[in-house]
Amino acid sequence: MNIKKNILDASQKELEQYCVGNGFKKYGAEQVMRWIYSGRIFDFSAMSDISKQLREKLDDDFYVVFPKIIDTKYENDDNGNSKKYLIKLEDGGIIESVLLTHKNRKTLCVSSQIGCRMGCVYCETSGMGFFRNLTSGEIISQLFTVENDTGERITNIVFMGMGEPLDNIDEVGKSLDIISNDKFIGIAPRKITISTCGLLNILGHFDINDYKYKLAISLNASDNKTRNMLMPVNKRFPIEKIIELINLKKPSLHNKITIEYVLIKGVNDAAEDAKRIINMFSPAKVKFNLIPLNKAENSIYLKRYEKSEDTAAYNFKLKLLKAGFTVTVRFSKAGSINGGCGQLKAQTINS
Ligand code: SF4
Image 1 (cartoon, rainbow, N blue to C red):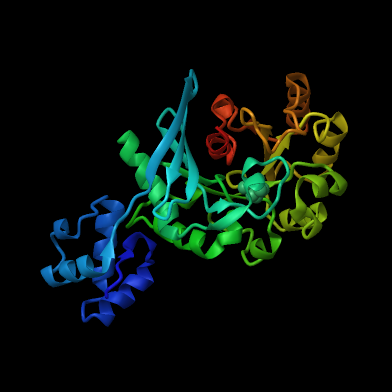
Image 2 (image 1 turned 180 degrees about the vertical axis):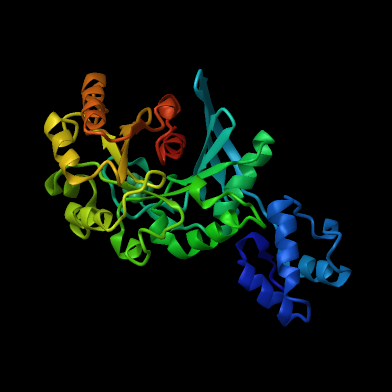
């Protein structure tokens, strides 16, 4: 029996091999992918410039499936709005995506895994454990699912949803090839951010000065003792290794590395912490993204931790600004809709 596959999981190279292997021209792969990814046409029979034989063969061997939206939370204010999606995949696995709209910018925060094995103690996803990696098609179809819901195209992508993207580098890489290819989805690499907890064994394969996507690294502590406690990955790749990597980067006005820092009351938000991280980095190479800890209502995973007091967060930010760093505060809008990674899923599972 012929088992059909989801065509969204195929790379351009795989589809080219398929076309050639079945007696069609290699270019047929690009034509099909243009219809799907650029045209958002998912019915093979509607792909009018493709031969009838290839369309029929594709129909025999492939299908297109989109995940289903099973819950949403929405919030808006003067600066824009946030909509969080709880999405059910074909095999029943559940992930989250968050759409952040600010003026004309529609940024989609995508998941790369179901659960996560990195074990960060401030993270709801971590508390659920790890189930599996997402396929490239499951990563890309988060974009199609949200576009179908809103009727508007996504302009920016951040890999900051459930999962550690570098722990699923093959499928994430495959999805990036399609998302950033201007013949296909065509979101420019400078509008795509990969956020990592610091898997330096994977990051080390890339030339930090040549890496075309934007990079964000979660630091979350100013000393190894605290970072070991918050992020087990620090035992393998401690703070000095992150500093070493960033020191390799040439100063850049437009492509600084983002240092993410979740502010946790009494754990990492003291004036001393700010002073230490100011001494670690150069404003010419990095910028900071401060993230108030975002606890889900009735969180079963984050009982021990509280978000920093407003004054502590404000003072922390001020110190970084005075030292010449660019500082933003991320996802604060999504706080009231449980906008941190894994939180909508955690809330749904617990209700
Ligand atoms: S913060 Fe990111 S890397 Fe850490 S456990 Fe959560 S999803 Fe994984």
